[in-house]
Length: 396
Image (cartoon, rainbow, N blue to C red; front, side, top):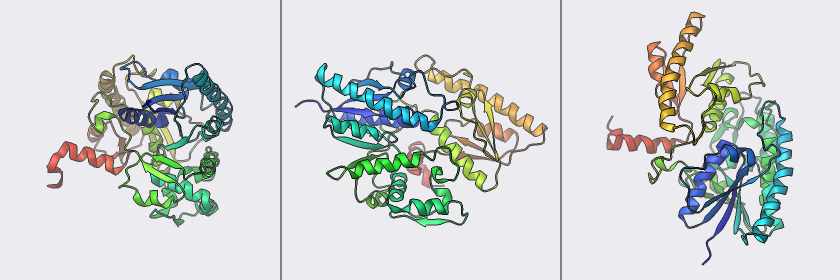
């Protein structure tokens, strides 16, 4: 029997690439050969050296910005249009070359969200395609229900502080529980039309389309069941091996965007409640962030992780990086808080993200309360909690 071959295509962003790579590794364990495809610029930044994974190969498409996409200088709408135009053509060329030169015909093309045009190209070659939704099923359900008649209700209600909505398969939601793309003035509101296009593409399928979702069935059973037109399949949690099955203890990387993006969303939610938020991250990440759209109540600061010019995967040692971020980060955070106090600003609380356990130690020096922000699901936190505490966790 021939080895199944899947082409897995992802948007060139860490929050898409990392779970897609985890899914690729899961497929490989079932004997599937996976060709992992992303934009040229993202591919060039990826660490593909240690170690080679049997059953995994790489390919690229062009998003029109092969040297890199500058979020500050380039209009996001134009970028997405270019990704569709250039990506469709380079994917088409790749499939033709694979069939003619390598005698490779893919059994399925799995594509990430924000890339609905992939399904159209796959149909040209009579190759089945499947949407891989790299977020929880509840989020998919919100967009699904929105596309099926709730969009206007949501858009008309989000400006009302008392707005509540009950969508099928979900608990009662306030405006703060909904994705920020629905908020008036959101510069990335164009995402909504792309997500609706995803639903339209799925609706065009002759048979009941399958959607792969980064979740656990038992965790979001009701949300998955509410999407009745599609066969929603949980394939999560898609996390590094060191934190799931332990088969590869050295595989620990989540990627920084997976921390920055949810933290920024949380910051905006706090601001809605009248809180002023100072958002702090490492200098290298801070320099890459789009800070042009001013948000009232949000200011920015940075700490040093010892790699202010950027951490190069495959070149710099990750263990050394974590030591450096603790050493340099502690010192620059200490200096920042001291300077803020001297200038008359005392923070009421310091909220810190995963992988930064040294932050509360610095905060205690200044007698500032701290709170841990876990930017993943409670189920994943529960796994780690009981892993580290054994049976002692419930005794307290």
